[in-house]
Length: 69
Image 1 (tube, rainbow, N blue to C red):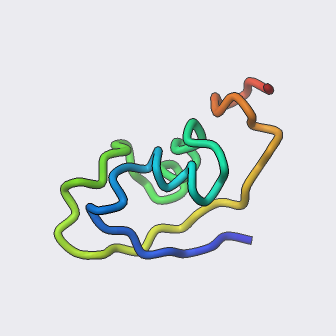
Image 2: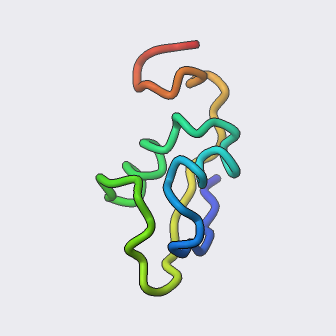
């Protein structure tokens, strides 16, 4: 089940969001893909925006698509 959170520039980047919510900063690409983003940097946000998070997936330990830990 996906979770929606609000993010701001203070959240820094999708790396920070992935580390906090998914337990693995290298899985930032999963958040980006789900939200149609291609840049992990959040510093340009002028206002809070919703961000859909995928469920945590421990099978993606390396954070690289198609590569298991």
